[in-house]
Image (cartoon, rainbow, N blue to C red; front, side, top):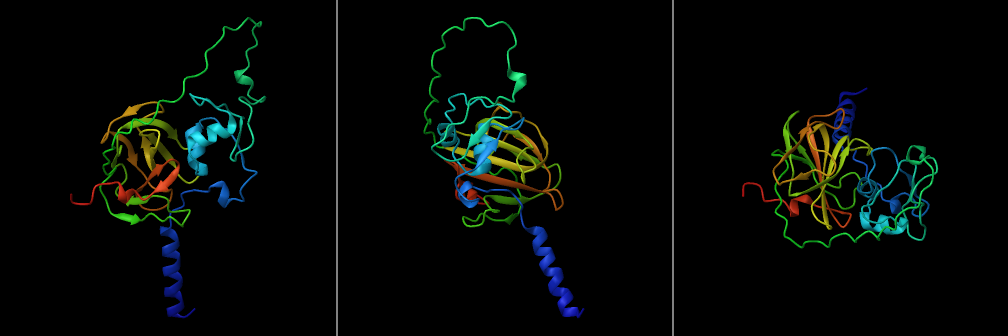
Length: 244
């Protein structure tokens, strides 16, 4: 092979290695209707909605799931309107009560989710480092920022909120944390080597929530996303300007 051709091949391979592989695959990009997700252990309604590119309230409404949005392993979650999934899968035997049936007390309907508190969120950078991959509204693989750093670097909450997912069940995100800041805004922190918060933990802006890792093969980095009503936003438009 000629030296010039070898050089071109090496450049292509290097660029391919830098491409993020975060999975963002809304149903409209996967063929629309017909998408049904089976709940696995560790899933939350928030993480399922996040992975499919929907607002969690929309998914809850489609499936007749009310506050506090409890779901079960084996449950079928429909990712389009017009169908209602059962509240619990028949295969979920660990949830079955084998004791003699007793009259159940009447339970009041669950209260609706508190409205958005309309507070102005004060965002801060989750880590300091060079942005190596920017946001793109048209590229499904670039729904946030990739920020370079070093292994073990402290990853911080970008704003006050509640942890609604902490685990590694979402393909392409590695060890992931999702924080709900209010009913409108969520943020996500992926590629971590270690997680320091659990679901339902309340966190403050700047709190150490994870240690930086990588995407499984490349250099250390954090993948960071902000979503508004389930739709990915360019984090740069929310975060303080560098040097300010």
